Length: 404
Image (cartoon, rainbow, N blue to C red):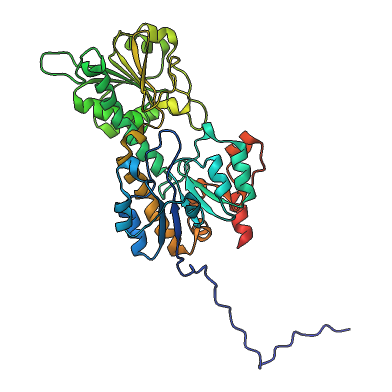
């Protein structure tokens, strides 16, 4: 049988289809709740009255629990003038679609959560509990963590700001404890003409180390920096714009320098794990009486063997006649500055979320935000958390793609 030729009818029109583009939906109205933090030593608030004013002016609703801003010296009046509603009932806050917190979610708050809410807060891996995660998963919560939130440049903006505050504060704190007012040995941080400068050792050349070095140099101290990452040491020198005394962490050199220093700063970051201990008890026992240790890395266990967690109420203890300052969450002691720094990141993020039409849409359009999402509609999307608590991990990119 002869094969038929394809039949083309002149009555058909053959046109190419138009390309369908991913159009952003119309903006959504956000309903944001800010509870008062009850957790230990938390004075910050995640949105300042100025930020709330911008959100309200853009047509969003904000409810704040009474006295939520007290720790950062913001009054209920400041917030109500900015357009927020003040409530005396925590339960009312948890009726909102988006909850914004400056401390991790507590067990009591877990019970107040309603299904399908969005939570923006820190996680603090050290105190995270499996039960809290499981409850949030059951309630199909979407959760974004401060620590892992990345901006367009791939940096963690909130962590960076908190590190800058902690680094700058370190020398102010050390100065307090070296003065006679706090039974220090009466040494002025820095130095004046004719008197050798105060000697400061900084262990860790990250952002905390860099800002501690900047402040110490500005005060006139002599600064020596240790880090095992040569690239970090180079970057720190470039950023500060001068030659500094730097070294890798070599125990004998470190011990020798600690013996004669006035201030030692622990600024190592643990990259998700516990900070390595690089200063032994033996090294601390050889330090000068009256010298000061400020262990900023106490948040992740500390890098001095003699470090023990202290609080803002009782910040120091003395061991081998060396004053130890080991308060976790140093930025909370400078709560107003810290609140402004957090707010500067979250307020534009909220406006963008509204413009995109909700958090789900923002996650789709902004790939860098995905690193901060550890729960998406109840699915655990953070590998470290799933490994630590032995819970099922789901890849966020696959989850989002499957919903399109």
